[in-house]
Length: 339
Image (cartoon, rainbow, N blue to C red):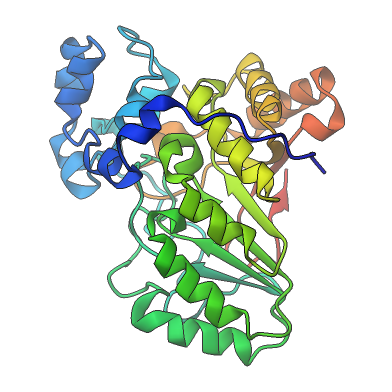
């Protein structure tokens, strides 16, 4: 268990605007993004069709961490819509991990015993091109609909469920009031023991970790784990460190799960740096996922033999607690499949 650090002073720029404003100010035009990075010459590689199907969205604070003038920047590669996405590849589909078959209620997915995953919202502050839910029918499948009633009733009547996972989209894109609405309803479920939140916002939009969110987290009756999603050490900066320290000071356990991505982190030095930089910010490595084979993401795939070799090299260089588990999610399995 990581000991909570004292809360550092909040960066001055956070006082100037709220996280909702930073969300609204996100870059949504691929060519604007390239111009900000001095990469106008790459505009002919942008796929307008891919951007129309799955729009670009990236907060300006995240853009600021990209390397100016570098067409191979690992953060840029995660968000830039390319023609590669529009090439059909056998074995890549719309529901890569069997979410549809595991549906047990509106916005409720039950794949593993003892756990219920709530698709809290379809909104996210950043659209990652490898997202396994990029084709998910959010308009029909959101657990927050109707005040979470169906989801909470399902959990209340199934005493095998001990842990609720909030996912999406990104659950922290919901207001503090909406999150509190859910947890107030769940507080009456006697068999619930843990709450887990999967969110990329502490990394891509650290302004989201505001006083209201911390107050909500601090008042919850269960142990809370936040699983952040960082794929490269360059995603961390001083503002992210502050956001993570605030979560730790509120008693939240922090884990990171990354996706192994070609051209982003398929290099042992990059993986070592990710584990070490995350741990320096109080985050324990959890999973290193092989790519979920969702349509539009095939150009990110790293083959299994190389993935295993990279993982072995990572284990040879780091202490065991800094080595994430290399896994793949396979539809119908009772847990993540180790590789």
